[in-house]
Amino acid sequence: MAVTQEQEQTLGHKDLAHKTLLQSDALYQYILDTSVHPREHESLKELRQMTKNHPWNLLAIPPDEGQFLSMLVKLMNAKNTMEIGVYTGYSLLSTALALPTDGKILALDVKREYYDMGLPFIEKAGVAHKIDFREGPALPFLDELLKDESKKGSLDFVFVDADKDNYLNYHKRVIELVKIGGLIGYDNTLWHGSVAAPPDAPMDDFVKTHRAHMIELNKYLAQDSRIEICQLPVGDGLTLCRRMI
Image (cartoon, rainbow, N blue to C red):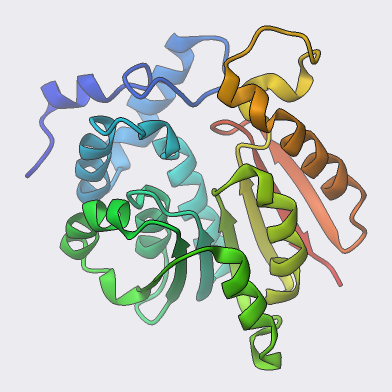
């Protein structure tokens, strides 16, 4: 089902109750209206429409971040990728659409239920064949992959948007799976702006719960000599790590 112009007006970022650090709502809406929504694939629009009505819609990346990920994948000529944390699949579909026909995404999530909600939109877009979805905790799966020497250095791009308390554990594993020159993207690294707030600042419990984890990750990445990093105020903060050695 196509998204009408009237429906599109209901898809603004305020309805998703997230995900921009811009101080001006009007400026962010301008970005969406001018550069993002007009070029958004129809299946992505429909998936976004469906997801915004889900009670956990905060787990989805915003469309401008999806557009950015798509551009990165194309610029890198990425072919073999991984996503840790899928939810309904907006970032997954953004990546799949950007990959070549024979590109692959190994998609990991603890709950297939949400992926299955987004699967009809992925199938409609004609990219389901690119996705290998695995249900279950990611850490044991990554440990198994690392036992196979042929898997080390095999990935062009990894996107992580999962349980925040394990981001550092994910990094210590995926850094070996991504190739030299490959890229890892960590979502939510500015964590609602809380990483720059004093510890006693008023904040929601779910923000406070993972604030320390994000601060720990950011410090670790900043000192990791194996990577180059770039932290961007896209969405809720996106840190890109290019493996050098």
